[in-house]
Amino acid sequence: MSSLKTLAIITARGGSKGIPLKNIKLLNGVPMISYTIEAALKCHCIDEVLVSTDHDEIACISQTAGALVPFIRPKELSTDHAKSIDVVAHAIEYYERINSCSIDHIILLQPTSPLRTAEDIDAAWRVYLEMSADSLQSVVEVNDHPYYLRKVKDGLLINYDSNDYKENLRRQDLDKIFRVNGAIYIARRDLIMNKKTFVGEKNAAYIMSKEKSVDVDDNLDFSLAELIVHNNS
Image 1 (cartoon, rainbow, N blue to C red):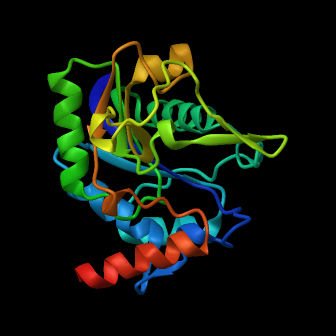
Image 2 (image 1 turned 30 degrees about the horizontal axis):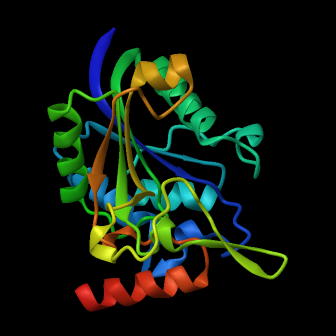
């Protein structure tokens, strides 16, 4: 079997409750998934770009944009309850079988993060290699630190997390906190296939700006992404 270093997998299901067919909704005149495909194709670290979808129109648009769409995703992997890890594992198994090759690394790119660029992906890849990591996730600094979060019980405010809570801390005294933004996931192939996870024991971080971290879930997110794309064009 030949060896293929890195496969990018873009997961794009047709079903969406918030925005119908949001993965191909026109974002500044371009199907949203095309931004992710274009970024992946420009990357130096990616050998092949594959789209896993259950929808014929998404498949057609993805192929036109330059991605491989070697199959239509099975129905059991296209429900609201299907797990991303199973979708990715299916794509790996299918690709390796039809190409008689083995893959070393997987880069998962979700089309709902259209503002992530090829430069981001290549930079994340360098971090992944430099850290000798098992996996990597892109993150963004959060605005709302857990220190400021509260619960309401019987009409009273209670600290969300009382562990090591101290009164009157200034924002500059608090550690920076990050959340996974969903834009870039990198993992060793064996971690996904054997342990069924994207997160290894040595999980590196790639920090992205708030602007590039927009994750389109609803119409407000879409409008924000469209505004940013328009302003940058």
